[in-house]
Length: 152
Length: 152
DNA sequence: AAAACCCATGCAAGGTGCTTGCATAGTAGG
DNA sequence: CCTACTATGCAAGCACCTTGCATGGGTTTT
Image (cartoon, rainbow over all chains, first blue to last red; front, top):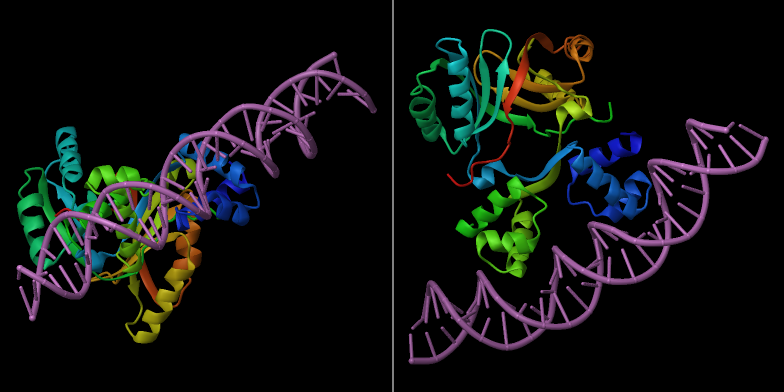
């Protein structure tokens, strides 16, 4: 992974639909070589995938919420079950096991407060392993590039 | 936006590199019509963009941190300045203005604890508008599809 | 220092995919 | 029932991607 590879990664993070010709102009290589390097980065697992980014409002999922989840008791069984729960719920678009008081941070995408409420009550709190949750609603998303700063 | 459009959106969220032929098989349309619908969804701003997703570890940015930022004083000037700060810092890959006690949640991607520390001290706390921060480090990312659950 | 080797690169061709004009089917309104 | 409009499929022309092949730059070996 040299500087050219990182340039390719940065470019594809910004726009995954770049043709190899456009990529070639950006990084200063031929299109064929860009194709080869990109293929290799995919094979090495550096590039995990390509995803379309959708508008939250226009798709009707304008409500973003960050919830802190605390487990009832800390054991491997509960840990395993909570992971399965997180993976089974499509409203959860991101989940982390954290340091500090709160055990997990999860990010939720819902249509409105009503569906958020039913998600929390029926899906989260209904689960035995969950002790309590703390909900914080995003008033405004100021930034949402999930782009790794490969240039640093 | 009918059911077919939502199917297209769901498919492209999972894999933006799908050919129109593959897309056609998934949603049950011809390739040409998939092309036209996709183009329209882009024009309407429903599809905001296409982005490569990179492996955090392999790109050397394996440390994910969520920081709560509290402003010193709440006025529009500070609010404006904090937005500019967030936008200027590439380590911040997501930022929200929140309800509740904490004013902002920001998600940080850094190489290691050392660079995280210098980010907090030199970039965040150095800023006049910032009163204090609360740092929570992600021990493990359990889930990270930023995919809107368009199917719900 | 010379030679041998290896890897990255550019070029070109063959194949694949994308886009758009055109004709048709399906649908809603009068 | 007819008209008008939109959505669709097909096909062709065009752009793009990929890969074999030859070349060059850099490195190791003798």
